[in-house]
Length: 538
Image 1 (cartoon, helix red, strand yellow):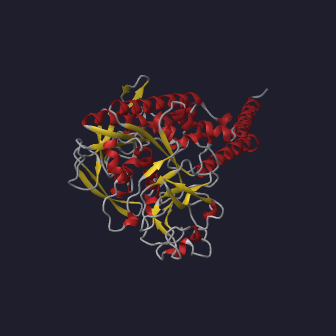
Image 2 (cartoon, helix red, strand yellow):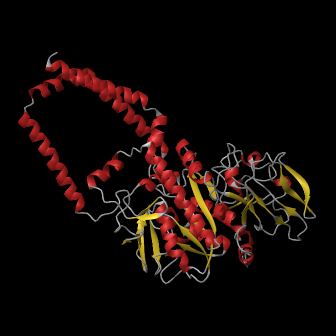
Image 3 (spheres, one colour):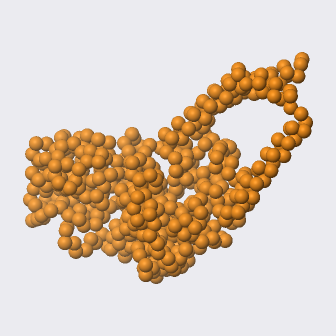
């Protein structure tokens, strides 16, 4: 057999192999080996995977049918000297690229530069922390966002403000979502939970942290606090890939601290450009993440604090995201709250959660923590204090079920109760004749009083319960928005605040729990969009 035929046969074999790979790499294979990426939504990832699969198959076909003879002719004419020159040129190009990359300060390729605002400083044990005692205003997501940090590097409301470690405190640890990227302080999750429970919060989070770094940050800072009430951290399957990296401080088996591994810069770029993960690497990451989150939970409980892992989920879970959540959290019995969110609730041009999403997350977190508060603090969380606008009082929220124990096609994973949401002083607030509940309600005796909507049948999609008394305090009314009224799937979004008789419906953005649109009430009252001029559907 001639040399030409051998080369052509080899090229045909390579092309055929590429086409077979394209056929074998179905969506299940891509899901197993290419993990969700927070900065890229699933639709984009699936489209990119389909494109890559098509290009691989097309390349194989072109190589086998079109390019095999031209390439064979070029390889036959190639000389030893010419081949060596090509090899030397490639090696020199790679070396120059490595030197250029090394002129930049070392930081993980998947993380933002430490000089990017708000600035971080290098830390031997943690990798990096926010620069302490500093305030800056940054242009993000089309608006100016102020950031302030106290002497400990915790994000606070403004210059001159500091977290008092002597006070009862809810500690938050995590990455940029907990740190409040792109949000003013009062829009962040720690600030909102603090407002709901009336307990000081300490935001220990720093951008780009992995689960190991979040644990190390808590372990470093927790001894400073005299009375830690709760510890809240974040886990998102779309951030799981970060836990597989060793280019930052991380924990080996047994929670043994390991320094960052210094890779060749070009080699470090390869996983970023082509983020393939073997099954063995993913399995190691699952075990490592489960161990660090379990250690965080145990550390909190050792100090008498209630641990909670919050799991935000934008849109439906992909099979890979559900697998990671169940294997890491459910399999270990870790306490967490799963918060489904509308996929549009993110910053403009950025996938970080916006103020609507952080409000929904804060409500879920406060609902889970409220029942676990010490009795000395429950009164503080229950008390709303004087408020010139009683219908704007801060809601008290509780969860009546563990979200992880519920199933169903509804996006609602748990039942929220709002106990102290007084309406306007009107005799017609939230009466049965004004709200289109259809057959979804009954009238029962509760606590010795008879009231409309005191309970709903179990089939209803209950969004919230709220107790509203008439001015004379003679009736207890608990309206619960449900599918028959709303005609839409219920998500965490904008919530019905009150249903004034013959006057429309008032919305309260701070309990934002409905999705997109609300169907009009019966003829006795106008629709939500007509209730107040300043409220309209999104």
